[in-house]
Image 1 (cartoon, helix red, strand yellow):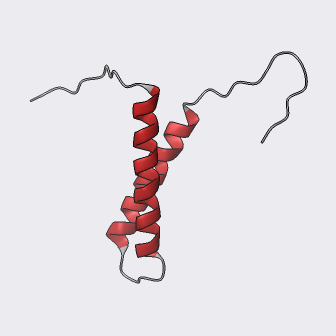
Image 2 (image 1 turned 45 degrees about the vertical axis):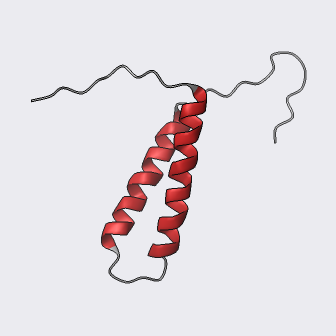
Length: 73
């Protein structure tokens, strides 16, 4: 049985491209699922994509300046 590679060599731009593609997939699935009864498979896929986007977001490190006032936004 093959084993999974646990060491990845992805750059920040690679992750950004993956995140953008997942966002577009999420948006397309959302348009298809809304108002469609019986779209259980697409709704499950939408939940998977949203969960993955959330995990990517939670791994980001957000920096704020140590000195001075932080103005968010």
